[in-house]
Length: 426
Image (cartoon, rainbow, N blue to C red; front, side, top):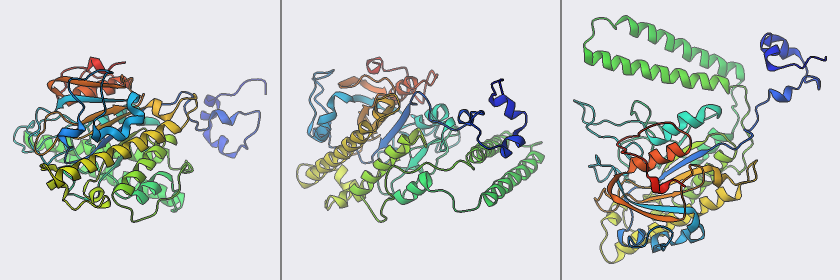
């Protein structure tokens, strides 16, 4: 066979390919799913509720740029100081609920932005990133979640909100996360194909019935129906992706299956291990984690409730708040260690191709200004190793917009953004 064969030859007769063995003359390796030659960019967003200890978490505002000192609350990150940037001055100008530490953190939305509605949200930064980065992975994005509702996060099912501003569900159990990422299906392929076909059939029937009632509707009902159709389109997209990956075996896990029953500090550490493993195997490229606080405190043997610690004063509650800050920073430092230790095809580390943001929508007590914000990783071209103090009430969405542009998303704005943070651009 002197004529080189291409993928197009076989697409003309896909049925013939199924019967052919993997002959050396026919380079089937060209068709196989392979990792990208250039490592892709990734994004991680980590959020905690109830804020930080104001006096000991933030760096000194008089020492900015590269000439800054790590405060006690961030001291466990000392070995990564040259790779982290702390940003002060950012907030969501529409935020008005002190116990909602994550609801609008990645969206910058106005709760009353939709006339006649008491709650409105918009797409979160991670989902904007997922639309850009998630097309070639099994999971477009991965949402991890705190199991306790009393963690200061507010409405939502995770940090993620879709393009319609609707909450996206998150996984709370590390064991379930592991199996979602790495365990092959036990159900026979034919049965799974039949289930997907049935779901498509139901969607088709629902769409036909919905279109029959379109005429003569009021504007309000028309808007509701449009939203309904959009939700159907979203489901169709997910089903299409499920079908494309139906016959592709999951990758072997780089970590052991987690033990059940872990909580608090060990649970967060395990979730961080799973985050690194998911990115390492290119199972997904965008991950959010709405972290627990209550169980963390119990694992640290701190007797105060998470909400009470946020209302600290001098004494035991302030000391407990500081211990929580140090524990969270130590866990973050451990995740950075993992990302730096994983080598990629270009000889650089996973850390070098990952953009990571860590913080909260709450500063402390009921204060929603100067949101705690730490940025790290090389994925978004962020200038690292510095302390930035931006003008008061700079939209936090400006930071997200800068990161999104850094990973290649061509968008002019996000949420309530007013522009890029030029000081962050390397």
